[in-house]
Image (cartoon, rainbow, N blue to C red):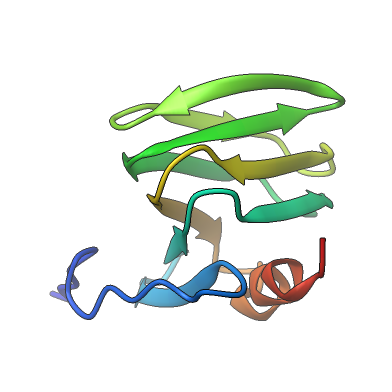
Length: 115
């Protein structure tokens, strides 16, 4: 058994979304993304399907140029190779589930992109 906490050592970065791997299993990786209000993850895509949970806050989630507001408690799934972007409407904590084949470094690279 492995355990992790989405709230333990939670730290917001003033300049960019903070990305941290919380847990790895044989089939997936659980990632925490902490975004301060107004922070953006520019349009990007992943080669694999993902699941996104808004744990705290609200985020404008854009898919193929259309945007929807997702709030605390909302879940969404996205197939691979779908362009998407995020903008935090308030300080937000996001749980991202990646397949084992995907890379947390890829997510960190997206967070590092300048607006």
